[in-house]
Length: 280
Image (cartoon, rainbow, N blue to C red; front, side, top):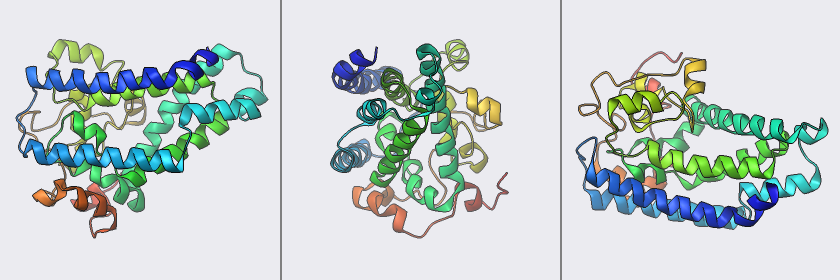
């Protein structure tokens, strides 16, 4: 399995990444969940541009992606799974769970630690919620995420195939979860038992602080249920809820130069502090 992952990961990832963008964009056009409030051209230019910049910077500073680093870790014999000689199937499953749990923990910390929130904040200053919001991450955050992933892989000794499988599932999940798409309520109710759905993740992008502080899961919603951060629906309803952050409604927050400058600008220490709410 590891050899197949090494050989085919890059091509499969590219197909899934661009295929997911096209599929969700078409779904949004055919069955949108909400009316968009901001100019589409302005939002899309900023969101697509920032993901191109973060990709270029990541490739420059980290010539190998997570799967490439997993190959290096395997060749060097790094990680717990190799030190204790775990059976491959067990190492595979535990690595998938640990990678997703670490993504949940990282995301939650980004909302609690003021310095990390400054870097993550730009993702929440979008005025609407669609598949391009999944691309809207500051380059500094992309570098931090990559560095953390390398650390987790080193400690776990995650099999190459497990890292590849997780990354492939995550790219599909993040595009789907950020889609401005209408999923029939009975279908959503079933899906959210095992995956993060758009209606579930949209709550996390609510301007209501208590809702922003919820639904941190990457691929599965189980961590939110386990750690008490699961919120099923926005109080105002999906059509009426305000997306974004209070105090960030000006159009300049959709412009590329302001998006890149956002971590260095004055702002609240975190979404809960912004509204004067108590941080649990």
